[in-house]
Image 1: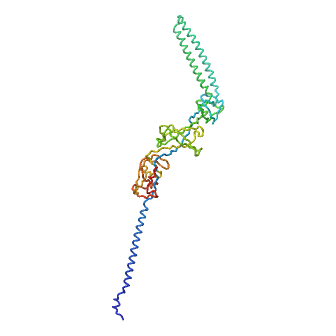
Image 2 (image 1 turned 180 degrees about the vertical axis):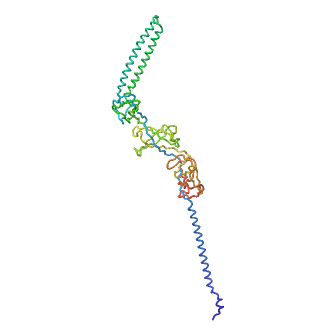
Length: 393
């Protein structure tokens, strides 16, 4: 039987010791790998989270000013337009033209029957004849009394009285002539004539209608318009008024002629800005063919040259803040610089900027409202490397 002491003091075999050491090493490696993996995962998560906080932005296309179309509504009017009123009262005897009739200057449009005026003319002729008869008698009497004065048959006072009577009779003749001429001038207005070559655009009377001059019923009998040339009036906003030049051409379009254009020329302007903040500009165009009509609606397109210092960006790139309009520009280090700008013209989908941008600036399109100076951003797309400023026109 073995000694108990020897059994307790028995040393394990060497291979068991090596196996235990190996197991401990494997366990240590597993622990270290797990710790390192967790640390790397945490670091990757932090890096990804940090990257997600950097906003990704798109760059706007920044172009030079160049020529821009300014499209505005226009009011078409005839070159000459006359409302034909009567100058004498009576009843319309006849009319000879209707709407759409082409007329020549002096052509008879209508006639008015004026029985009262006719009688006044007859009375004025009789008054003139009476005044002339009295003048002749007074002249004979004055001549005779002048001869009697030479013979001392009458006094000088009496002769002067006869001469004064002759002067009064002569004045009465002149007054009678003036009255007759006035009535004859009114009588000439019984004939309504066209003042110039044109087209009758309205007729507001008919046979037998009462013609009253100077009263509430005094309306225009006809309207005659000279349409061989047209005037077009356009209200140009003040910020573009300095770019309108006399003699420049503009393009007109009308709804009834889709796809067709007409050319008009700027001939005048009001030289004063109205209360609505616009300058009234007059254009003229040839309308010999009569295709355009007075009173219709047209659109007038001006091709305006922008100043060389202006640039154009989309309206979506503008940030409107309490201190005015601004744009967000991406710097070389991908940090944001918010710049104040001066808007020259609002073109709808884009705006012209007169000051605030430099050549080569990379402007952010649709910038976040919370974007401030110094923010780090990431530029999306291939344009990030060269900048939208290179697209200047």
